[in-house]
Image 1 (cartoon, helix red, strand yellow):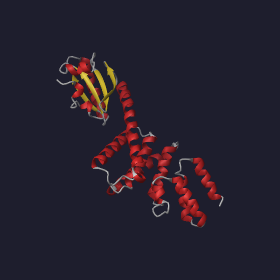
Image 2 (cartoon, helix red, strand yellow):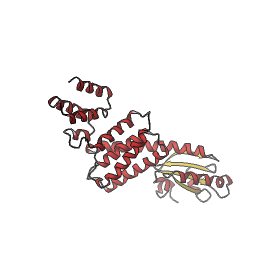
Image 3 (cartoon, helix red, strand yellow):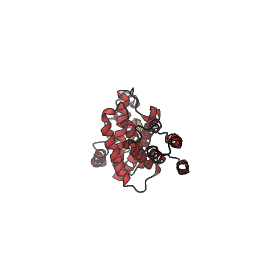
Image 4 (tube, rainbow, N blue to C red):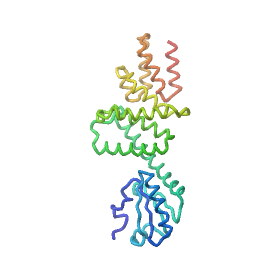
Length: 277
């Protein structure tokens, strides 16, 4: 048999998250724990459960330094990130999975944030490859599953709103516009009942409200709004209002933009400048 790490056919070397159970037919605790492992795997869609008979796979057991049965190894992206030995309870296994999942979700969020920064005006490029789109879809599905389990995670909820908004205005995904809009509205609805919202989710919901309203579709600063350059857009609207002080449309757009500017002192300064006119 080849060296285990050289055998890329091992499932835990090429899957996102895998729990490997080293067991033996003669090990009563191993057999007793199997139903629990299967239950946890069924409850965790992103988790793959692999069972390795240590009696038959001696080289694998030796390579991974298995000294006690049962032994559970947790792999993320092909790397071992934790292990449990002996008979363990459901809470211990879920704690190990949660630690791994937190790392995985953080990595996914970083990749999506990087993706957003690389897109012109935060719009999915029409030249994106099918492979790129498939990867984006997988990332979103992973975050959606996570959010179903942990609906109070505002950072994930806010990021999903932003990415859905980007996808909605994308030429590449234009045929799915209604699909993205429905997802946005669902997350907005959940967030509306959260009275202690943090600034991140507040900003995401404010952006969604502005984009879905169509208020800036014909605006002279629409290109800045699409690029999320809200302070620059507001400054330009303030300049236009000097020339057209009675334009209620420009004034309404300016007021809406103030809620989107992350720098609150700057937003308040711009508000005072409007009232001073």
